[in-house]
Image 1 (cartoon, rainbow, N blue to C red):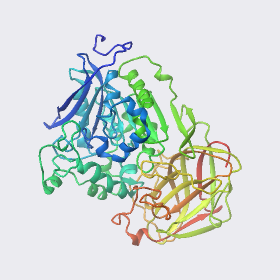
Image 2 (cartoon, rainbow, N blue to C red):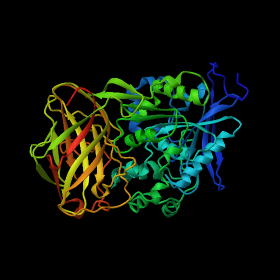
Image 3 (cartoon, one colour):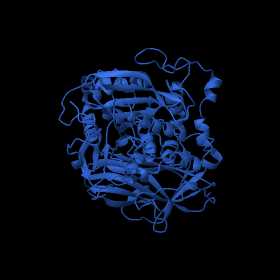
Length: 581
């Protein structure tokens, strides 16, 4: 039963059988053809469309692309296996078996140059965003389409949503970016000025190049056919290189936020669609900050933010969360009056030690309205964090050492923290530049560090922040007392041994700490890693910054000095929700 415009009526309870139209041709404005899978109800009516668009392979099963995630799902999440056969489960995209039976069409598009789509591979580019726009408009006028397109997906499949939405395709109706930053410079490629070599050096060859169209060495096979996922063509290494943009070189060639970057960062003020933004505390170093900031800056009157704990991927396909996603799209793609508007505008899971969630915080604004902004001042002589500025002192450390750590005394009462964090430092360097790596940590009453599983490391600290000090210039429009935003549009070299005030944005965090716990701030000139940690991941996972093309040791391997006291008040500004530090 359908309404006059073909959209299933709100009271329709039927569950549809799913059919797959495979490798459907999607024409682009320049004559190119991309390939898409269309999962749709076995029904002659018209249905709202959900779309994903990216280079990871629409036909690459999770068990191939990320075997460890597949094993983790099978070992620990029977509720997901009960809800779906997971036959079509692809990394960071929705499971069609959880959507099509409820009257949705799911369109998954291989971006140009990836998987089954021929052409030049140019990810995160204006060309790719134009293709995304064209794919949305194509889906909006197909005979099976109700003309309303929603976007959904994680990470890459979330980040692209911000960009294409700012282009305002007419058939786009709603967005659901799940843990995907909008900021291509500050988050995805340069951690506030520092080249993100660890992530990019892993992501580019593993996630993208292995699935380049025509790659004969790809290990990926099509879920349905069992054939190589990169199409029948077999290109030579030279042909493959000529048929793609040199992503790493492009990033290295643009150390500042210049016009090349501006073409890849959306104007969020142009986004007015209904939008449900979901971030994850485990997204340090890549998505967390930019996901939350994207929510803050879009102009939509209908916007919601949820910040979750746990695995960003597993939570996305958890049946309980899929039901929440579906309720949002039911409201804005199907027009069902289901009370979605009454959901809290802001909902934040407050973490507790042991991967627990203590409680859900809800509000109508971010940061949360009851935040008590609390300064802890650095005592450079005593390596302490104190409620009042200490005596004037300084502390020196070799940039490439373990740096210096400042500790609070044991907490006298329970404390809850949730929100953005800022660190103000007075610093000097023996060279003309310095990189700051700032890590917020917590320890229990037995002095054991409190850590959490994240997307990059199994023992992640509370939060981290980064800054190239020659990029210390602030954006006066976007900077607030609790959140410094750097313009990254010019280099301001240091005079060796001269003292400079610097504001470092430490990414948002949440934690509920009991009496006797302690907070710590570690400051270094290199990535935070625990020397005694076994295995390859030691605190910052693969999100490292160790490429000497960007960090020549003669400049970034000097001696740093941190200053504290009344004349040079270095401090950390924390968002306390309850209790007192």
